[in-house]
Structure formats: structure tokens, C-alpha cells
Image (cartoon, rainbow, N blue to C red; front, side, top):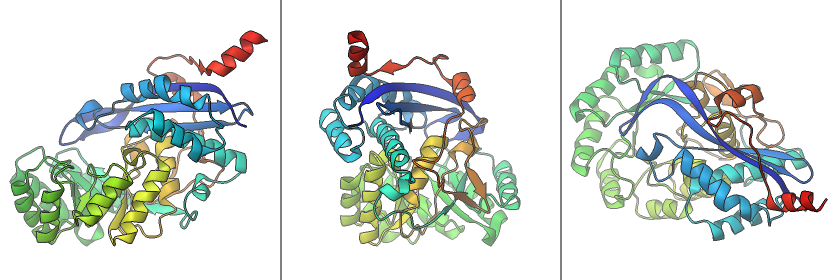
Length: 390
């Protein structure tokens, strides 16, 4: 039985290489919650829980993710056999409602431990196992300045780093946004695929007009133009518009995926491990989408290296990723927190092949970027009791 001996949950704050403009906020840095678990055999697992824009995006923030793990999830882990990942997470689910990002971070750490014990990548512990070793990677052009975004897109093409580009829109007047997208589509031409993400910021009427106009200027895909709970509007837009609608914020695990598929509310799913509630749940969302004939896209919450590696392990098991992925989070940060950076080459990300997630932390960088700037470790109660008895 693998018993929890140590747990450390901390927030790291890393600046971004440029302002990242979203419909609801502008990011100048990324705050990532890292959880590190060590079992009684000395096997360590790491996980990450990361969201964007604090509470402006969703119901969880870095601070709430850390609090949920420390206060409510770790006590559950103390009574579990950590080698039984599914059983452990089932117990967590009974004791903690929602909090998908926190649960995902913990499940990631448990799977990292399991892969290390067995000597296999996490991808071999999910579904039918790995079917690909690399993933096509999109880049988000989100400076908000048309000329700067075109120059950045050209640079990425020249470096052979990205040929899929997503634009964050919805903050400006609709026609201004469409003109911005159209100029980029024209500049990059058939060398790239250009998509947009509205982050739920349009009404149905705006989306009806905007999607039609975006189709006319050469945009390939529109992500979550209306609120995620507006399935009726999403279904009407999907039925009436030629340009595909991708569900993102509407997806919060397998049940939501089934509702969207059964109501024909989207033609593409943005798979996200944290939004789904974990790696296993994200794989279920992918399976539902595949069964329903819905296209799949590997999404990101702009995670750092740990969360990106975890997402890559899941996406490597998906038989068909028609729309590629956007696992570029580490590239948006000024510093890498992994001891060895992930490999980005020829428009793709190489999926790590080592045991577990296949990555490890750079302890010096972690010590520097930790919000608490110390290495406080939360010991499991059972371990404290054992030490007291000794």
C-alpha cells in the first residue's frame, strides 16, 4: 500500500513575454499551483492546477485551488492507497464537489507517481494508450495590435514553430475585431490556419453577425462566441452558420459533453484536462466527441510545463485531433520551471516519453518564483503521528 508521506502545494508566479489580451482580462504573468506528493516508498508525483485571469475567467483561482487541495483533498489522500489512482480520485469526488482544477492537479500527481512506479509514460495508463508521439501546436496572437500580431505570426512561421493561430477577440467593437482578423488572414494567407476565441463575450445576435463576417474574411473556426450555458443559442448558431463553432467554457466534463453533443450545440470540442476535472475525464470527453462525430482540439489553460506535459499525455491517446492543439503555455512565460524544457520543433510538441509525466521541476526556479518564497512542506497527519510515536 502506497501511503502519503509528504505533500507540498504552492503557487508560482511567472511573468509572460508580453501582455496577453483576453476578452475579460489582460495577463502580464501566469500563476500556477504546483502540487508535489511523495508516498511511503519515496515515489514523487507532481501536478499543476492553472487557470487564467484570476476569478475573471471562472469559479476557481490559484488561491482557491491551493486551499481546496490543502484543506479538503490532502486529508482524503491520507486514508487512501495512492497506487490505486481511480479509487483514490473516486473518494476525493465524494468528499469534494466541483473544484475541477484542484482535482486535476492532484490526479496528475497521482498518475505521475503511478507511471514512475510502473516505468511507463502516463499516456500508457489512459484509454488504449498512446497513438502519436507529437502534437501540432497553435499559437495565440493576443497583443491586440494588428501590425504586431502579423509580425509575430510571420516570425512563428519563419521559425517553423506554429502555423495555426488563434486570435483573442470580443473586447472591441465587433466590426473592429473582424477587420483585425481579416487583416491577419490576408497577411498570412494559405500558409496558416487562423481561428478566433471570443471567450463568451458576444450576444447571440452579435455572434450571428460576427460568425458570418468572420467566415467571409477567411477565418476557420470560432471558439465559444456566447456564454457556455447558452446551449440553445449555440445550437442555433451551429445550425445556421457555415463556420464551425467550438465549445470551450461550455465543457466541464463528460456530462456537459454529452449535453452539447445531444443538442448539436457545437461541431468542435476544446479538450482541457483542468476544465474537465482531470485526465481521465478529459479522455471521456474526447470519447464522447469522437462517438458523436464532433471534431477535437487540444486546449490549454496556459499551463506551465507540468500541466502542458499532462495535457500532452492525454492528447497523445486521442485517435483523431482534427484541429490540432494549443499547448504553448510554457512558451508564453519568460522562464521555464522544468529542469529540461519541453521540445517544440517543426510546428509540433514532442510528447515526453519518460516514466510518469516525463518531466521534473527546476528546483532553483521553483524556489525563486514561489509566492511564499520558502519550501514549507505539509506533512500527512499519519506521518506526523508515526514520527511522534517514534
